Image (cartoon, rainbow, N blue to C red; front, side):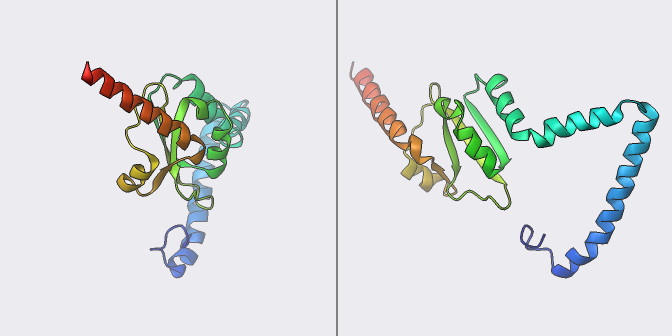
Length: 166
């Protein structure tokens, strides 16, 4: 805990653990009581399906939602993305549809990485990765897309100048 939240002292961490355990046990007991009252025969099945969707298959489900629900989005902002999510997202067609801006150093320990996905079709990226670092030092253009983006920027720049000259 002190690694994740440096302001918390080791004493505070040590003293908080028994209290957290008791509060979580009470919370769980209340939830189990409510579920036994509301749906005594099926709540456990519902719980297991929620765990499957929200925990065990979180990455797959999130990618599915991004591909289906947000397929036409020009920009997608993601917070607290796990390193494994970033890795798996790069192996999907999302990496073909979006410029992926991610932290220069992926934090696999805390798994609290912020990402910006900008549509390659709709979003005109106006800065190279170098200027992006200047404007937002914690982000960089994923190197596998950098050449494509620079070529596209050059092409867009030339087209704008030709259009302005007409």
